[in-house]
Image (cartoon, rainbow, N blue to C red; front, side, top):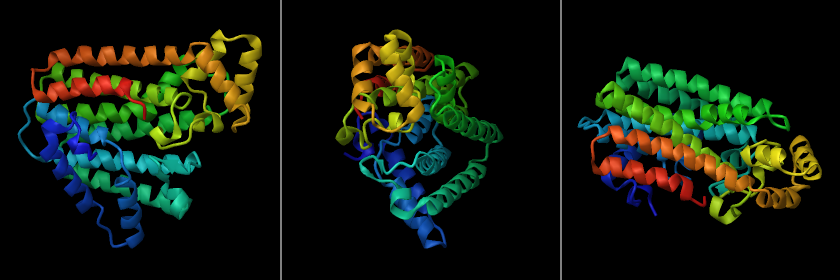
Length: 324
């Protein structure tokens, strides 16, 4: 199903089509490989939730202009560039059921095309013409980069605590969700309370989204997720299911998890899967995601009723109900 045919996207279906056209136009480059890889990654699936947040936030506050189209497209370029870089750093070979760009073309072209998309997003940002939006997005890029570095430095670290984990995912994932809904609200000229509400909504939605991602790494299937189950464990990433399991399991089982984190690889996958499923770590992770969604939904009370608000509500519920 095309993203703009989804119920969450229906109120902004025409806007979404315009975003797609803008993305295609902005991918133009005199270097053929830039266009080839750019089109490959942009068209490789996904619901484009971050540009959707821009559109829904702006329309929910009564925006009637057209700059939200450019804003949504540049947010997608920012996201796409981080995907290209992440897959190289993580040495990933599969995303959304397809070979990653680095698997298909190699690391160097993937990194450089990611740089192109990031640079192009800043060109588009200038065209949006708002210093406040530029300040939000330029700050967000720094926070996202810091989150990625935090995650990298914590690989193989079995002593990371929950707070450090939440700090990491707030930077590497939630920040762009937050920036999307925040800038959409700013563009629409909403009241400061409404702008703050949509900023917090995006942040909490992004936190929940990453929590469910981390849960699915120990519960999902490769076919549904479009990536390999156990990828996080193979990379030695200490995500919340493992962090919680280390606190509540026996010393013997905790030693297995600790060894799996510190060594990486999939040698201990079956045993770790059994432990996290048995000790309640997945249920705990889901509870934390639900808590984030409750906070997000509370913020929507500050918005006027509309089909756009309804979609934001539906999006929040779907974030924790998804299986991929």
